Length: 110
Length: 117
Image (cartoon, rainbow over all chains, first blue to last red):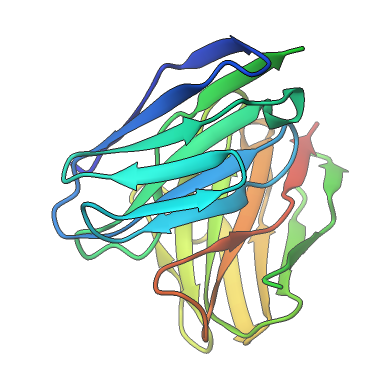
């Protein structure tokens, strides 16, 4: 069964304290690995798509990387407005929709 | 770009009634749309995939007669929850794939909060 496992479940950082979120995936024939940000009571906001191992993408304070088994979302010098739940999802193995992990709830304290 | 809207944003209905939720891609054409459900403090679970002009494909465990999906145009998909019961109360979120966009990328709507009393 295709699975996505995210860690940690929750992370509390001080403003400016860099860290990384982990996403492990098990689908065979990965078509894409996706990162979204979700604020409470809202739909997920698209961040990145990664297609192959070794690929990296950056946007402001966020950088996503991909290996054959996992992806990392690195957050550099975070600000309180970066507080949100970050979701990792995969598509592949013949499926069209996304299989999501449970997310990492990130809190950035000023 | 890549904006998806949903209507209504929240709805309260009585047990046994039906509710329709609309999902629209505002600035792109979506040949494929998806419907997800999210329970409190849980992640999104795919319910069904719909392609324009075709019958929807439902995930295992999702009752197709209860959750009716119609994808009549390249910008509109609807989800009708029939004979709703309190256990159907959830956050329903649609997503759409841009026909001219990057492979497999999906853009999500803001979600619809359904409460069945």
